[in-house]
Image (cartoon, rainbow, N blue to C red; front, side, top):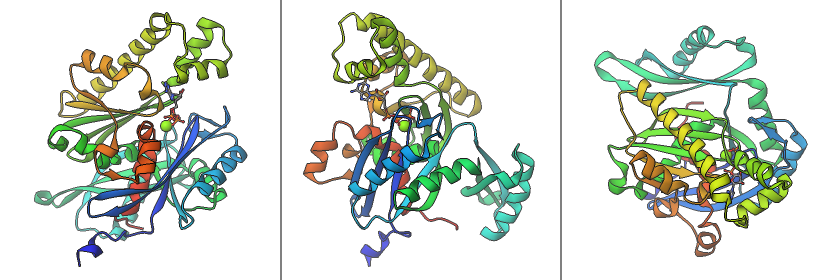
Length: 358
Ligand SMILES: Nc1ncnc2c1ncn2[C@@H]1O[C@H](COP(=O)(O)OP(=O)(O)OP(=O)(O)O)[C@@H](O)[C@H]1O
Ligand SMILES: [Mg+2]
């Protein structure tokens, strides 16, 4: 029966993106047309609770997680979160394709010991088979390792919110996975294109490159909207909170365009150019065909047009509602203008519909 094809292989998980400024969460279901938004919420975190993806104030995060859970459908029981930053290491290795999952795991542990600069007792290791090279009977395996304390902090956060942790992913790959919802936003659904998905948040820019639906490159940079707020603080002598409010509401003196916006745009452009250069040097591709911009700071005035003009490629703001995401009229109206902030949470929620090997 056709309907059975769309049955989730695991119970649906709430995708929980624990960022610098807030926790964002999304619950999806899958159907023949695509994905249905069943739950969505974001809860602010006090400043300093999460710094460089490290949970510094577990109680503050637990409080936010309880609020998240209260906003989700009652049936939501499982969660997926992500790690990123310097304690995460990913590497693609090549293995014998005839190995079973168990054999692969044993072999990977041996490989990991050589690759990872921490004692294996202090790290969590995961792997995923990517591409098969039939001719040589080899399989490309993505190996991901993360310091266990970083993983445990996410598991604890989910559980504090009453969600049983099922998946701890790597943030860049979760972002890349959200392209499933976005592809149809692009001409020809992005087929054969090299697409950069750029998440410009509060303190971190995450960059994922997708080719034919697969994430082939990820990079993070310590850059985001906080720098913008900080320059408002310095230039106009406001408190950080005043500056943040003025930025989001757009109530700034007109000269902010030259004094604050333009320098920020230049810095952002430099960061993006640098990442594209690193990607081009490490792959067979010379450039990107287009960029999809997401994250809270994607809402900064004119960022998409500036990027498009300077790089000479189309730049779109992420809009999964123009792609494969469906939602009730009420939800679409309420979240339509800010849905681009939820791409990591969406990518995590999408893990509910993928096979896994555990
Ligand atoms: N309307 C707006 N105009 C400009 N900036 C905005 C607007 N709305 C939100 N922002 C900025 O977006 C940033 C928050 O984005 P986001 O929610 O993606 O961050 P985060 O995921 O919590 O942080 P990070 O991923 O960097 O850890 C803040 O710097 C905020 O000021
Ligand atoms: Mg973020």
